[in-house]
Image (cartoon, rainbow, N blue to C red; front, top):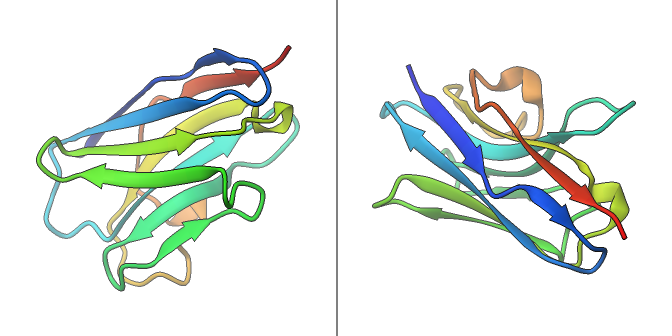
Length: 126
């Protein structure tokens, strides 16, 4: 099985920054996409930023474009989400997930992902 462990969440003031990390182990060669999702109270889980291996595309939710950046360290098998200019509406539990499906049209659809981390809480508040 693929194991995903998120870290780096915490409490930050509006306008501040955090970097989330997702350590990947037991990774198989047939994975197609990895990304970050979040779920806040009263909302459905949504894609934040996802990377497709099928075509190299990167997805960013409109709400985070220009503020968040996803990256990978292949050697360390770690995926990062750099979050800048944080807003209160960014408050959520953030999850790292991996999909074994081929393609990219579903990249931001959480139902298409097979493995999930435990989540890390991000709270943006004064």
